[in-house]
Image (cartoon, rainbow, N blue to C red; front, side, top):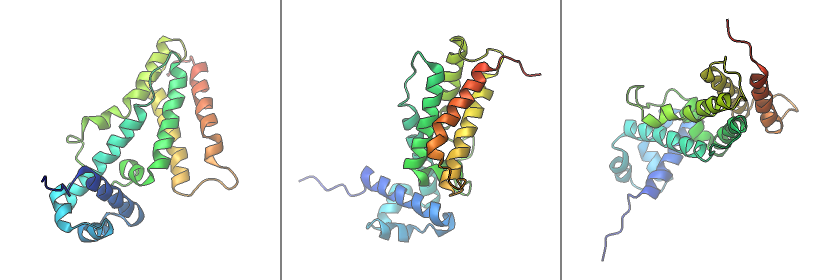
Length: 203
């Protein structure tokens, strides 16, 4: 009879998501491997076996946040409407954040997490920005964006708008009587239209 595998991928993911919730709510100082094991109803031996130590757990937590973010953006397939793709990427950004607020905070807000150094970060981290830049470049080739504008600047403005609006929601700082969910897509569309109408080169 085959031995039951207890330290499996399902357990690893449960530990990561519970750890993300703890860091989100109380910071990395509150993350105890012993308490984490108790919360997930496993042993500290399992935690050490899967992650090595607390630093290994936090590194894995960061990488899981990246993996899910890249996976979500990859669902937005390129179409013959690049400007629309830009908006859809912005919507996917928000959907990831709302569905995974703890991991979103690990990825974009909590710099106290001991994630890998810039030189050691997984290649996927760099790739999170690329789909948006590629969509803008395709839009320029299709005549949807002015060719005089730097595609990375256009992409950055979209990214910044998405990040700012999402952060207002997750931090509980939405303006009174104005739900970001009701105007998020309109804000992205207005921004994209502004770049479509802008043909004046910088400088």
